[in-house]
Length: 159
Image: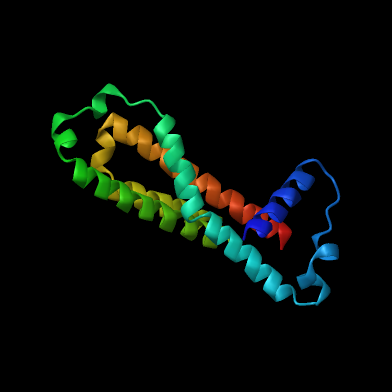
């Protein structure tokens, strides 16, 4: 997986700087004529990137975000264990969201991505009244969508 990530990164850099990069020339999978396995590996790599590495990246971004005054609610501070459980559930929701967006992007169902984001917002409607939660929710949702859409675009371009 590490080497596949390096190859994908090199392909993206070459594409960005308009340098010819013929993966098919150097790929053992392409030389054997088994392009189906090549596509499966690309899709699985994108799926793996959308899972835990993306969650870690978003968690690092949240650590750098300043804490607003509205989020210092004394009742919420007492429920530290419950908050940690909610964060774990939120991470799983984010992974599922990215995977669904990735699949919809690969299938070309771009309008359905809006329904996924709308359903997520509808489930958190009451919590969006809290400004601190709404800001964090928006950053997390947009980062998740961006990562999944970029993975789908790269995967579609290389397949």
